[in-house]
Image (cartoon, rainbow, N blue to C red; front, side, top):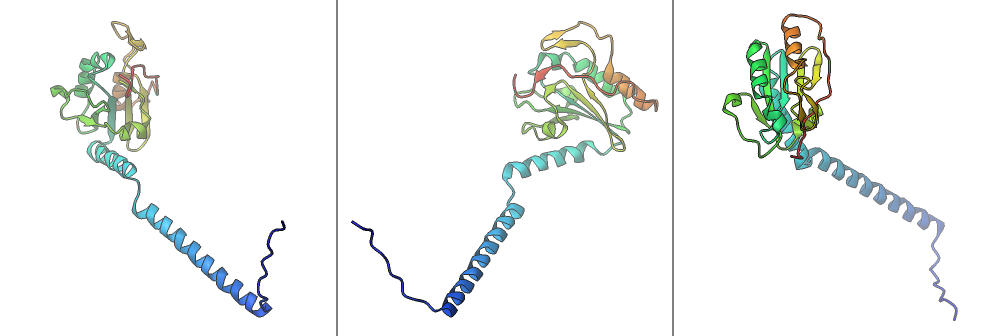
Length: 204
């Protein structure tokens, strides 16, 4: 059986052109409106987690970037390596000029306990917004920032950690302490970076 043939009424060339013209205008109008609607949505309604992260980073910056230098140290009481550095962190904090340095103990772990000794310098980063911004992946890891020169040092506090869970009893090189001394004496930074070894953030 042959397929049925649909016979359309004949349309004059003038009418055909008019129909094509009207349809083209309608299509362009719909596309423009759709694009404008998508653009407005992206500009006016950013995804909530993105705006929340920006707010956290701004809160950190407003609190700790108000001095010429900032020292960030990732920390968690759930990490044995971090806990072993409490005295070292306190010493570094106390040796620095408070007018020039802002210290921040950056805590990305929800279950990490507050420490009375560091209550004024703790900053909770459970959304990992600040950690992701500055590229932190382990703790303890330190970052020394200068408003004028950017990153001055990134890495471990000293040379005690040799592997995850493996620490020498005493440090032979105190990297962070040396960097802070260099800054305060207007000397060239002698140690620009060292790989940080510690507990992986979010994986205790």
